[in-house]
Each structure stands twice: as structure tokens, then as C-alpha cells.
Length: 409
Image (cartoon, rainbow, N blue to C red; front, side, top):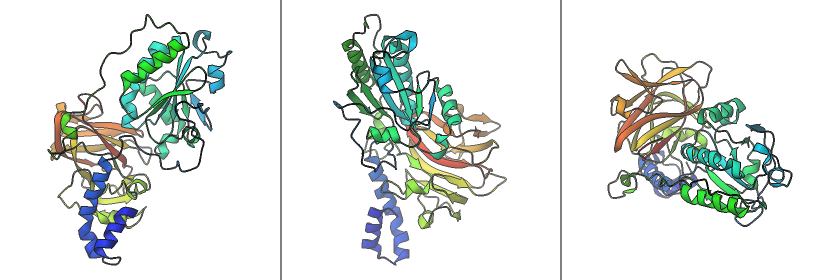
């Protein structure tokens, strides 16, 4: 168990009283869920404990790109080259402002920001803005260059992307979350930063301000005027009791932490990398995963541990939101199907996310690469029961994420 949860268990259940601990487990799950609701939306990295200079502080010098394993859409870049007098980029123009965006391609919070980044690139690249997407992976499969290249193409990103697989640039900026944006002026000073989604109007205003300070003429470029997307009010209504469900992780590393207890069955926590037979208790708390059948609790993922014939093994959960997404990566090379039910039935067309297939009374998505799959997209906010199952032993679930916007994941 996580440390703070163990303290509660020890105090209330006694060090050796496993029966009482099991009885306390549902309460501890609730406590962990509440703790999760009080954290920021952006995910925290697990390997950022080394002492480093605060290179991301507003008003201080920006850190250069460090430890980059590969560059996509660009030759290797440095801040000095971008901001120097002899810097060459599109049309031979010098960069006047650099926006460093820390992201990872399965992060739903990052995905929601990409349309704004693309718009800023399209509007301001010729005026001196250079966006550099620093891709710092959350999961092991996100380290693979071919996966990042595919994601860059899928999302239509044309600006430079740097693979920061060892978190070197992340550490140089003392960064702690995805997504994170740092605006750097023509003198190499960090003038603005924002962690997480939102504040798109403010960020664009700062971009324009720094470009104009550097001499750019933006008189012919209209700023974006669309307001930031707003969560459905029900997602934050404590009294209604159906707050937006927190992000859920399948792997043992994230479960065995103070923000963990994502799996609602105590046997999961007996140790990592164990194949166990689980029985769904049937009564599901919101914001937890419940397993049925044979599953392996890997370090990063929950993996189906056998080949089946009738989708009898599954992952179940109760969630509140308008959308539900699953980060899935195949353990093998063969594509497979993941069957999805909502409240015990197949999804209807108006409830299905873009990755779903609905045919012959079934709803499913086909897994052929490691990425975020958009599973559920509801016309209105609500609380529902969701089940995912696959006959393949290559089915590996890394995370669930949920949304409460009118459109998108």
C-alpha cells in the first residue's frame, strides 16, 4: 500500500490483522480517490528528483535543449542558434520568440492543447515564432521514435519535435507536468509559463506581445477570440456527487503511490508482476478499476494473462463524464479487438468515440498501435458503467482518462 494509506491501515487494522485490512480497503480506496481529485490535471513525472538549476523560472535564462535522442521535422536545434543573429529558419528569418512545449502523445491533456499550438504555428511562424515540442515519454512505448513520428503525423504537427527520452531537458527546466509551455523572448529569457490545459487566449496574447517587442508587425494577423473550452458544470458539482472521474492507471508503479489505489481489489497490491485470478465484486466505486479473470499487474500496465474465446475476462469501472479514453498498447505484433459495453450493452452510435466500430450488435475498437483510443463520447454528462474486454493475451491497458467538454477526448 502507499505510505499514507499504510499508516491508516496500521493504526486502524494492526500490522498483522489482514482480515481487518481487507475490510478497511474500500475506505482506503475512497480516501485515495478524494486525494486524486485534489491534484492538478496534468500528470506528474516519476523521475524528477535530481537537484538541477531552476531553468524554467520566469525572469531567468532559458535552458538549452539537452540530452535529445532524436529530432523530428527539424535538424538538431539550440536556443543560441534559434535566437542568434545568424539564425536561419523558414525564409531565412530569425526566430524572435521560442515556445517550448513539454508533451507526450498519449496524454489527453496534451492532445487537447495541440489544435492551439498548430494554430499559433500557422499564424506566427513567419513572424518569428518557433514552437519546439519537447516529447518526454510517460510510458516505455512512447520512447520509440517510430511511435512519436507516427503521432506527429497523425496530429498534423509541422513544427520541430525533440525526443527527450531521458528527461534531460525536462529536468533542465525543473518541469513537473504535462503539458507545460515556456515562452522565451529574443534575449533567451523565460517570460511566461503555463502548466496544464487552458489559458489559450492569455498565452496567445503573450506570444503576440513578445513578437511585437522584438519588432514583428502583426497588424495583419488576427488573434484567436474563441473562449477556452469549459467543463460541464456537473463535473465540479460536489453536492451532486458525480464529479469528473480522475485519471486511472493500470500499472503497479502508479498504483503503489500516494495518489494510487486505482484498482479496487486488495489482492492487486500483494506485489507487482503477478498473474492472479480476479473476481469482480459487482459493486463498483466511482474512479476505480475492477478486474475479472486472469490478469498480470505489470509495472506500467494491466495485461490480460490468457487467450480466451468469449470475452469472459474484463476490466470494469464506474465513471462520470462525457468522454472516456483508454491508453492501450499491444504486447505483441498482431492487431486485436477490445469489446466495449456501456451500462451492460453495446454503445449506440451517438455514444461512441471516433475509434469505435459498431456492427452486428457489438461495439469495439481495434488495437494496432500504442496510443490513446477515444472510446466513449456522450451527448450529455452522466455516470455510467464501462467494461473493456479482449480475447487476446496481448491486451495491455495503461490508463483511462475522462473528459467533460462538449467536443473532443
